[in-house]
Image 1 (cartoon, one colour):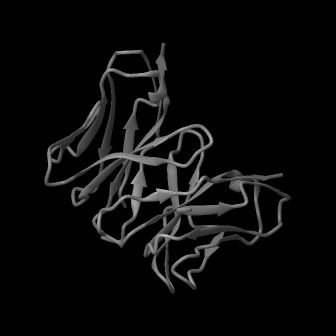
Image 2 (image 1 turned 135 degrees about the vertical axis):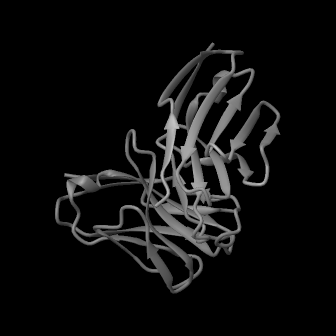
Length: 114
Length: 113
């Protein structure tokens, strides 16, 4: 059982470049989310989805886009990368929205924007 | 929106001692409070959680307490071992019932042999 898979694990971008961070889960979870982790700031919610076709903004959505065309996949897009987006990104999934169940996290993507 | 404050940011204990990490939350309607452990280079993993209708929960050497009136909850680790060294995050699920988790800032726990 793969759980939550994130690719790539590491990425270096130049300012202004675009890229997509991939996230896939094989647990048929409805709820998926993206967090960024910065030193001393914990995990901050970027965007989340409560099901296929439904997405919403979290605490720090600016500069990021998401889509949820299938239950399994929840890609995060950086349209024009900025140095402030240098961070470690985590994708998470859980069973159903609002059911107070465990969130499973991927291994993370370490992104550096130069 | 929901805000979660976590203290201390770093904690160093001797092996065998107890460790306590505290969190406060702002949304009185929050009803779910998980704790996650993050080892170096890995994603966070759930270690224990508590729901708003329970005051305390234990699982072997770890326990969580919840004080709804004061809006704070704590993680207690007894008989600490070197493998307990990690970053610990508390979180709260807000009242909007969307499954959104708001995390604290994290505590780096070091257990010295």
